Length: 148
Image: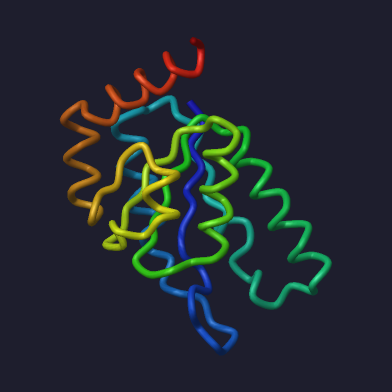
């Protein structure tokens, strides 16, 4: 299984700032504990200085990440507040039949609702659903629907 860790980077910052990215390590650890053979891609890991990229480099990286979301088996999106980049990633993943699981308090947001197989308010709820088998069940059902 290939898992893409989407999530807030710049969010609504007006200045050239990036949100705390520590959630990525925690989510990656949770996923790897549950699916030890999973390939987990963290788009921030190879681009920690992306805030300083030229517009051409930014476009190249962003387009590449969006393309990955169209290809990976699962996109896990961490969205504590609105994130335009994450919205595009989950939209494209959904449009291409990929599974999207979203961790967010924005449970009434249409983009979140329309693209997500499941929505969890926080990381703890996500981890409980993963370890309890709920997410595995959703992914099996999603895969069966894609094959039909």
